[in-house]
Length: 419
Image 1 (cartoon, rainbow, N blue to C red):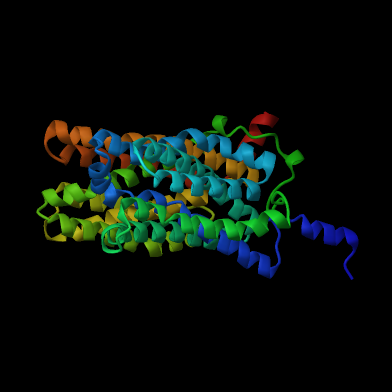
Image 2: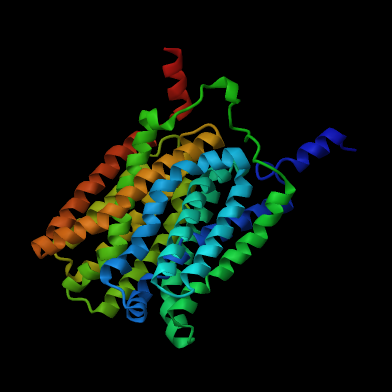
C-alpha cells in the first residue's frame, strides 16, 4: 500500500511526472497546442486578397496581419519563463490557449480594428506557448526529448500546411467567407483547452526532471549574459530570418524563373510537406548525439546548395533547389528547438533560454522579409536578396557550431561564479 506521502506527491507531480494514462494525455495536449501555433497564422496568407477587398485596406495594413504576430513573439517571449515560474507551466499554457481562442474569435468578428486587435492577442498567446513548450517537454519527457520535440514540430508544420491549403476552399467552396475560414480554427483551440484542463486540475508546476541539478548546486543563470545562450539565440535568429523570407518570397522568386502562380503555389506546398519527415528525424538524431555539429553541416548544406541553385537561375532543377531550401528551413528550426533542452540542465533554464532565443529570432524574422523585399524592388532582381540569404546561411553555420558543442549554460555560469 502506498503511503499518504507518496500519494500526495503523485498528485502534485503535474506535468513533470505522470502515469501511463497521464503521459498519453500530456502527449495529446502537446500535439494539440502545437497544432494551434501555426494554423491561425498560415491560414491568413491565401485569404489576404479577400480580406483587403472586403475591408478596403491597403497593402501595408494587410502586411501587418503577418508582421504583428512576429513582433508579439519578439517582445513577449522573454516574459514567458517568469510567468511559468510564478503560476506554473500547465496553468500558463491553459490561459494562453484561452487567450488564443479569444484572439481567433475577435479577429474574425468584423472591421479592421478587430482584425488587428485579434491578431495581436493571438500573437501574444502563441509567443508564450512557443517559449514554454520545449521546457515542458524537457520536464515531462527527460529521456525522450528528441522524439517529443520531433512530434511537436511535425504537428506544428502539418497544421500549418493544412491551414494554408484549406483556407480558400473553406472560404469559397464551403461558403464560410474569409471570416469563417479564419474563425474555424477556434475549434482547434477548444480541443486543446479541453485536453489541458486535466493537466491543471491534476497538479501544479512541473517537478524537476531527473536530469536536472538542484537549484542550490548552481548559481542563478542570467541567459542574457551567457556566451552560449547568445550563440543559440543568434542561430535561432538567422535560421528564423531564412524561414520567413522563404515563406514570404519563394513564390515570387519562382515566378521570375517562369513558373505560373499556380505552379509556384503548389511548389511551396510541396516544400512544406517535404519538411514533415525531417522535422521528426532531426530532433531524434540530435538527441542521440553529444555534439550536433555534423548534423548542422548537413542542414546548412541544404540551404547553400538550394540557394546557390536558385541564384544560378533555377533551370530545370528549380523544384529540387526549392525543396532543398525547405529541408534546410524545417531541419534548422527543429534543431533550434532541441538546443533549448540539450544545452540546459533544468527545465527552468530551458524556458529562459527559449524566451531569449525566440525574442532575438522573431525580431530578426520580422525584419528579414521587408528588408529583402526592399532590396528586390531597389535592384529589380532577386540576385542581391539571394546573396544575402547565402551569407545568412553561413551565419547559421557559424553560430550553430557554437550552439552544437556538448556543454551546458549552467556549467558556464558555475565556472564564472567559481573564478
